Image (cartoon, rainbow, N blue to C red; front, side, top):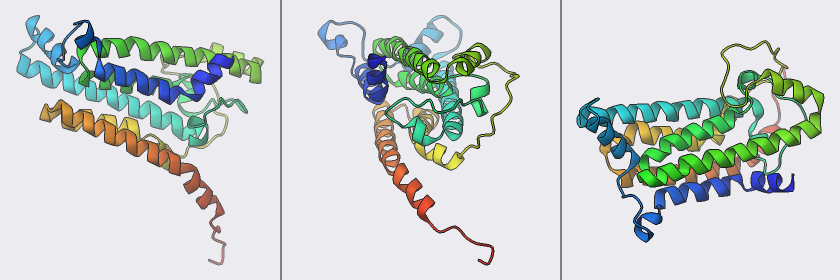
Length: 253
């Protein structure tokens, strides 16, 4: 449990290190494993070599598929954050005060981690092929460890109600229908969008900048988006405090 708490507290750091290793791929120069060709270009080349599509057609197809995966990441992240609340999503410690069974949590237990997986899959297109392979193995493995740790924590905190929830809702593959009744929570869409600038930026980069075929430009866009997301996340608690302290209008106003 202590290890799970440490992994959860520093989850952004661990994922950032994994992603940086994927982009850097030091084993290419050190051991000669792989080349600097990006996964996007490699996939397009392989599709053309198999005779499925011409390279000039395969490349746009890969870009569109990557943009769709990134869009799925945005949907799951914003949808999940809107219902769970950014104070829980960004908290360095696990929270288990009440059971969340509204919004996406009626269909899948971990929409936020599912969104991260989609975002990472889209980002891997900009990495060297071997770096992408490393990330696509290491990141989901790390996220799965987080999920198991959170589930053990929540079972301890909430007991049988959460066990019933575990049996009713799939872990990572959403079901199309649910019999769970909503618990009455309300979403906050504005705070969710602000707290999820990073996946939104990944989608914009893949969907728009990929057509320039300038990988350095796309990587710079990702770095700028990530930095902006950290700034906004740091400011969110202060903005929320100011909004709660602001006098509420009365009927006479």
